[in-house]
Amino acid sequence: MDFLGVPFPVFAGQLLIGLINGAFYAVLSLGLALIFGLLNIVNFAHGALYMVGAFVAFLLLDILGIGYWPALIISPIIVGCFGMLIERFLLRPIADLDHLYGLLLTFGLALLLEGAFRQVYGASGETYAIPAALQGGFNLGFMFLPTYRAWVIVAAAVVCGATWFLIERTRLGATMRAAVENADLVRAFGVNVPLLVTLTYGLGVALAAFAGVLAAPIYSVNPLMGSNIIIVVFAIVVIGGLGSIKGAILSGFMLGVFEGLTRVYYPEASNIVIFVVMAIVLVVRPAGLFGKTA
Amino acid sequence: MSDMSKTDSMAKPASAAGTAPPPKAGILGDVRLWAAIGLVALLIMPHYVYPVMIAKVLCFALFAAAFNLLLGFAGLLSFGHAAFFGMSAYVTGYCLQSLGLTAELGILAGTATGALLGLLMGLLAIRRQGIYFAMITLALSQMVYFVALQAPFTGGEDGLQGVPRRPLFGVVDMTSNMNVYYLTLAIFCLGLFIVYRTVHSPFGQVLKSIRENEPRAISLGYDADRYKLMAFVISAALAGLAGSTKVMIFQLASLTDIQWQMSGEVVLMAVLGGIGTMLGPIVGATIIITLQNELAQVGSVSTIVQGAVFVFCVLAFRRGIVGEISHWIARWRGRS
Image (tube, rainbow over all chains, first blue to last red; front, side, top):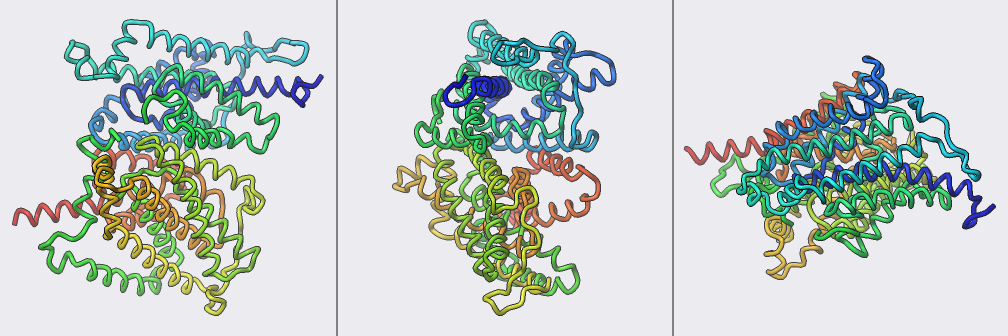
């Protein structure tokens, strides 16, 4: 059974991998967009914190015997709190400077975290078992769908949807959006904007840690896992524009799938296809697909 | 663009330092005097210190100066300079090893590669500003990295090893470390002179005006994008020159030269030394290279220290070493 020139199981398999990668891209670029909205910085440490999220899950299991399901909640909370400390004590003092300083500082943090974990755990990485409830898979007739992979896509989609709902449909989200538009005015209404900024950074970072826990059973828990993915996510963010929550989620999933399809038809280019798309978007529509301003 | 309207622009803290010497600087502020002293020191030094080590520092100082030309004087933060450095290294290595070209042709080919790559990347990257510019250059350089990983002429994971040091102009022997050192020194001086001339020319003044207030520069009739692109190409070409020189020194071109970590390192050298100063990149490169050599045996400690230095510089030391010293001198002069 052929589909668009390749056997259908091959096509569907790569589509699935694309969707899974897209799920991680979406959750990570969503966090970046959240942070960018209120802090106006690009969080270079995002990939490193994603890695830390995976490691916290691994350590919870290894040291305390806490399993996957609690770790899915606990790890983002721990990393989120860590993120709030970073915001409060490192990013706030430089908030009024050129935003490039924020980029440099978070880049330094990424090096620090990555170097520290590599020093302790080496570059080879640790394995994390798939939880019992999600082992096995379904036979769809044309392909085998591992349960855990389906779960990753569903979980990421639900978390993205929930974050979107929080920002776009709740009172807290409305306050946050107002603070993005005009922080001084919101402050004049009695809202504690600095606290809001800290919480937003914590939330964005928690999302990265959540993605890290999701990724732990699929990829090995590896100190370098963050820097490998974050540059791709940056390209996705340039393509989608950091302006909108919906744009970040959609472009994450779309480009993941696109990358998967490239692996079917022209595997040599699958590493660079997202960067090529970025270059084309920059020529055709410099502000990004969903972006408002440059 | 909104970035630039902020109170503390990226390169401002050092603007007092790297530009023309202050009017009443006296003999201590004479650039030529200091340049002469430095040159004499560098001419003598290889007789006392291992020449390959100083050559490495000079090579990276040139790389950092090229990067600093862009960040310090045009206000553009590139996170992709490893692409120029690394790809030029590959091209030079290939020219020397497989095509059997002489040293100067190999280095020229590498530099041209840097310039061409800079033109292509610059055309795309200058379409966006500030942090987007940084992200785009990073992403494009990662693309170059993957190309280098898969292309046949780069040797993949192994890189190009044992690249022969072919004679300069076909006559001057380059096999001794001493000769390679003096070649590196000559290239370094040439590169630094180009940076100096670029910064202190009408072109450099326009760049600075674009950095400080782009809409105003445009309203005065300057084509800001063309100036930025030109600065990007010059910077990329010089980074390529540094990469080509590196191959002559180490006879090696590898993926390390082209990875994003290398881009981060050169940013750190410039930030630590002092953004927008002439001497800053040299000081920064010297410190970082020495640090790496000292910490090379202890795993990832070098990465950790580099990260910590980054955070410290941004939080408390934004002028960098040279910028800070110039600032003190200027204050001391103002008081007396």
